[in-house]
Length: 229
Image 1 (cartoon, rainbow, N blue to C red):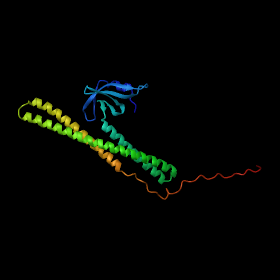
Image 2 (image 1 turned 45 degrees about the vertical axis):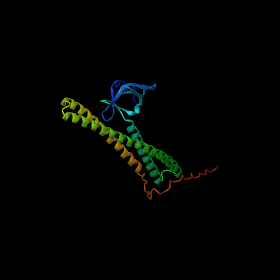
Image 3 (image 1 turned 90 degrees about the vertical axis):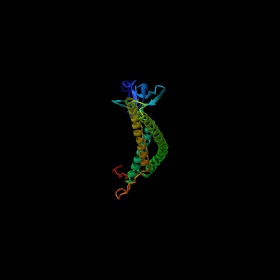
Image 4 (image 1 turned 30 degrees about the vertical axis):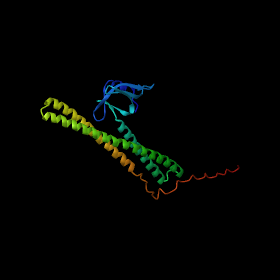
């Protein structure tokens, strides 16, 4: 779906969040073609890093701009490609089983689909490794936040900081723990989804007696003899 300048304009200067609720930066500019179709957004990350990000990684909601994480964008692309190729392979098998297409067309299309599926599986393997690495990174983040929470609790119980200070810090830590937990579960769901798609066999329909009939050959036209010719 194309996004035009008019849609992006009202979000300029606003915070950009990820799907889990974190503020990751601000939308500071955009890039568009001669027709006014936006191709990329310029995002400031932490006020020290600036990056041009493709428009397909964004969602525009009533609450603001959402940036889809790169890992999720890649995982979704791979999962959709696997789903589409498996469905197309099933379709070509079904058409051939019903004798609705000739053998040469079946073999040509099947070879092309199988080659594409092989490549998609290689991409899926690479993406899964990246997702597993992301899980470990998030687990490290959760451990770090839990240690920080323990430290602040200890200082509060020991009477070193006030209740007001403790509650403010605790709220921040709880929120960041929730973000990390939600993202970790999301990453694991994508790993499971891609695993299942990789292992899912292409169902080959059984051939019924009606389907085994050959595609009717075109019959020669009757010869009409015109008297006097």
